[in-house]
Image: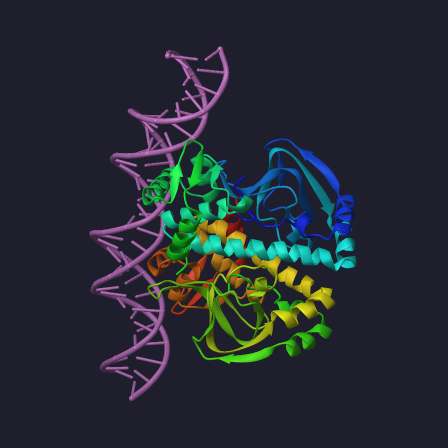
Amino acid sequence: MLDLLSANTPSFMDSLPERLIGEIIRAGTIMTYDDGQLIHNRGDMKRGISIVVSGSVKVGIYGEDGSFVMTTQFGPGQTFGEFTLFVDLPRTHDVSASGPTQINQISAAVFNRLYEAEPDIARALLTTSLIRTHRLLEMMDAMRRLPMRERVAKAIFTLTQMDGGLHTFECRQSDLAFTLGVSRASLSTALKQLSDIGLIKLGYGHIQLLDTDRMRTWVAENCSA
Amino acid sequence: MLDLLSANTPSFMDSLPERLIGEIIRAGTIMTYDDGQLIHNRGDMKRGISIVVSGSVKVGIYGEDGSFVMTTQFGPGQTFGEFTLFVDLPRTHDVSASGPTQINQISAAVFNRLYEAEPDIARALLTTSLIRTHRLLEMMDAMRRLPMRERVAKAIFTLTQMDGGLHTFECRQSDLAFTLGVSRASLSTALKQLSDIGLIKLGYGHIQLLDTDRMRTWVAENCSA
DNA sequence: GCATGAATGTCCAATTTTATACATTTTAAG
DNA sequence: CTTAAAATGTATAAAATTGGACATTCATGC
């Protein structure tokens, strides 16, 4: 799954103390969605927090023309929509199921009771929220400051860091382009360049990181200062 | 101040219950900085939370060539660096004082004691963090999906929403361009277009929103779907 | 092993954005 | 009123990115 926003970090459910996990599960209703089915609409004001139980969701925005710009994808244990509980703002994204998916939907009223009684819920949400902000800031600065090649290298590095240093990851270039919000043509060119430098090896349906340390060094040198 | 990240929203200190304000102030050390003085460096791992007491700070990233891409500017009551307390990640940005500025610097050790004892601190941080994430997502999607003109309109609308519907705001086009991370030439063109549509009126050192409602409608129609 | 659909590599023209430069307008100081 | 500095408006060429097209390569089922 191409989840740049929370890859390689503990989810909300992971961050919760044991005793609260059951509480949270009991607090909501498990809803089932088919592949592609809409879960939330951008602009909605309805309040409530959603937690992925199984499957995954795509988070992004549909254009009038039906185009979809994806921001991230969330898997089991991750939450979305939590800001609706604390701030009176419309939802920023359309969320739909990617494959058969179960979501634990907790209403604002029920969640707030738990939230007030159990400080550790705020602490767990805070940790995941801060990590997301950190990632978002990194992504945004990459978009603004870095040329395509560097941006792509950084994204690949981030993605391969999950699963504790997996060296090859499965993904079609079109999916990666979609996740990064760039055209497949540009991505292909950038990947070719990284391949020429010897940082990665391109395959059919997968990308191989040749040398994690060299990549780390290269990203540090070319993407930070 | 051109603060797209938290304009028109309560700061951390605002969100804190009365009785904790004094605690937070006593927990840290007030540091004084001159205009332009560096407060934190991107890449630093040193832990601690910083709260603006007076003045303001510019948050962004310096390029090797000395260029600076600003992400946001924070004023009194707002925090930065809080993620270093919960996550072992390097700082994402360079932070420097904008004008004479006082910062309340609280060490990780001291802050954590308060944080564990007082759940309302986590709750206050969570609220501001979620608002920032919301803004960041909106900004990022604007960058990816919207043409310059729409992006600029949206930014102006966001900025004029503070102070409860101020209709004119002081700023040089070069500053606004800087904040939005675009060239002054592009911004100028976009502003001209918005002016031609009749949404804004351009002045020397200020921009006037002619009709808040029309602008709201226009932004809703052109920037959302 | 062959056929077929899927995925990749690459080219081009069109578009967007930038950097740079310079003319014009506005402000404020003398 | 004059003048200089500051800010804005605008033109041009260069650069980056995209969308579309198409040939090539790969994987898989038959």
